[in-house]
Length: 446
Image (tube, rainbow, N blue to C red):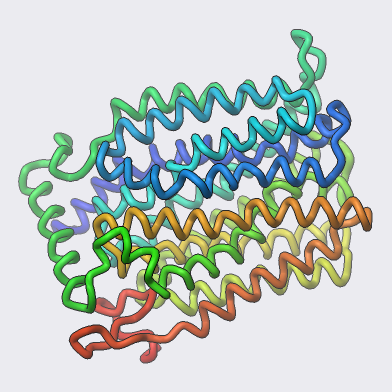
């Protein structure tokens, strides 16, 4: 094993499993509302539209505070900022037990979005403090595998809580769900404050030679970015870049599909497979388990080939096609689970490669703002998607038309990604919009 491989393996072994576990907690606290809906909706007298609005309003708070949160992280450091956010969102998630109607439900969900807004983009930025872009496809895929695995882990647990704990201690099952899945996040936040370090220079678990090597590699990458074209280091560069806005559009399409599944999968399975919460929890783990496995191999293949754009487009097209078939055919049982699984695989594989794209052309404060802005605008799909599905279900009583809407969003993301071409940098050299051009040739050559 060469020195570079040994150093990056050491960093990965130290950081990724911990960040992975934290993201599982974050994602569970965000989407467990889908299981709570099976009982909470009736208890609080909520319509499908009210539920969809409350599930999605999380992303309004997310949108408003995500860019400032990432800028604060760059200045304050990941250790204190990420740890503090985890303590806060764990507490807010627990407070969902206090919801008594639409207004309180909306308020708690928006507050949860505000306090969670800095975590995911913060981690993506934090990874750029350690890894050069040639490593990020695989590393981001490993980190984001927490999204589908959260479904694998939390699905059966949530189903069990919903099936067995109603009435215990005077609380309904959905209230126990928020308590038992919110407390671990607060505990993990306290651990984060002691476990993480803010960059290689402060990593006492690395030797001086290893710290110097990582710092040098990151500095070399910054110099390559500067040589490829105009500076993208300033905050203003993120908002004025057409590349960033195209990435926003692609990510919006992915998130429409992602949260359409995350917030409505239990209901889809209740309509097509079983009404038993425990069985719904077990079956819901299947699509996410398959997606978690596929995205690791997909991210590795993208790193190996150095190609990003087409990987993103093909994955989005797979998700869109699966949603479309599900909407047209309206299957049940095994076929329904199979189509949902293909949708999950396409979404997760595409997203895992996607985050290698903007980090290849942004750096410094521009990267902090750009990553957060892409995630903010893209995650508005997390508001639009459940709201639209809720309205459709109120009017039609099914999710068939809703799946066609999700299909359209994913196929649009595929089309935009596929159409991206390389521009000329300031020096006249080809600068690929969202691929590792300096490492593996221009996108036009692929």
